[in-house]
Length: 93
Image (cartoon, rainbow, N blue to C red; front, side, top):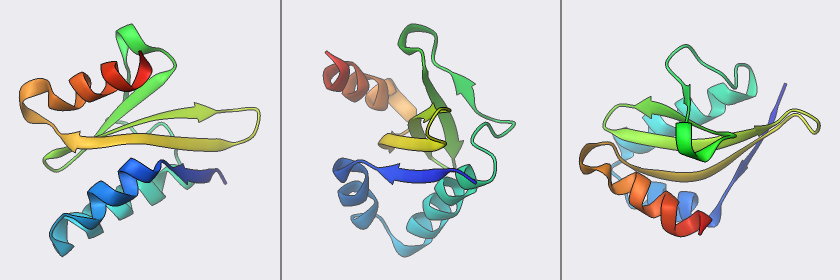
C-alpha cells in the first residue's frame, strides 16, 4: 500500500471544483494507494519520473517514490489546451 501525499495546490484546486468532480478525482487519486501505475497512466517524456493519469476532464500529474512507497501528487488541471503542462513547466523550472 502506497502513501498518498498531496501538494497544497492540488488540495486548493480540488476544493474549487463541483462535488461530482471532487469525488471523481479523490477516487482516482486514492486508487494510487493500491495501484500507482494504472493502465491509463503514462510517464511524461520530458519530465521523468513524473507520470500522468486522466480522470474525466482533468489530468493528474504525480511521481512515485518506490523507496518510501509514496505517491506525490503535485498538480491537477484541465486536460484541454495544455494548461496543466504549462503549469508543470513553471513549477519545475
